[in-house]
Amino acid sequence: MSIATSVKHKLLTDNPYDGIGTFLYSRVGPPALQQHYQIHTRALATQLPSNARVLDVGSGPADMILQLARRRQDLELVGLDPAASAIDTGNKKAQKQRCTNVEFIQSGADSIPRPDDYFDVITSIGSYKHWPSRENGLSEIKRVLKPGGEFYIFELDATAGRKNIPSRYKLPALVAMPIIKRFIKVGSISKDITREEVLLAGFEILQETRVDYMPLYQFVLTKS
Ligand SMILES: C[S@@+](CC[C@H](N)C(=O)[O-])C[C@H]1O[C@@H](n2cnc3c(N)ncnc32)[C@H](O)[C@@H]1O
Image (cartoon, rainbow, N blue to C red; front, side):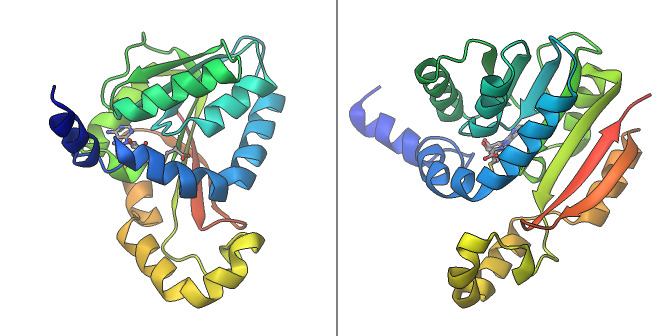
């Protein structure tokens, strides 16, 4: 591949989070989500049994799954993302942080190379709205989730307001609220649609809440 073709590929992929997108998103997304990762990984690390298996669908720059890996070295962790650059970033960070219990797999939610009933917990943060077929993604997740296991969906909440913005972003948010609101609206899928889709896919809803310290909503789902 010539340098020009390689640069073009890095800049213009179908997935806006691939190539340079991983680099750009890394500067904005994970820093804003830090508090959320901490609360989520602390809760998982406390509740998961020994040697449990966790999958993060759309793991992106991998900060959440690596944080969980550092908290619990006995867990078997998988980060899945279709973006080659996200996988590359995850592998490099894992090596740097000496996390040996995470594997990164380049794939979409609709193709998870693991047997049926494999994972104790599956999470997805800000990725659900990007799946080309959410129906296929949900069906594949249902296949690899253990009966009684938990599937967490976190998504941008278009109904969120200023009080749902983390405190360090409050002042800039005051000025930028119209832009932020617009971004959230364009880049989100409503809670009602998500609820309809997960029920149609046969999941049972254990919990449906708004995350009050972030413009996110959360579903905790299971299968019997
Ligand atoms: C907003 S980023 C979120 C990344 C990460 N979860 C985080 O907490 O920062 C959305 C991610 O979803 C991934 N994605 C896009 N299409 C996907 C698909 N079909 N299946 C799984 N993930 C996908 C993107 O590559 C991107 O890394």
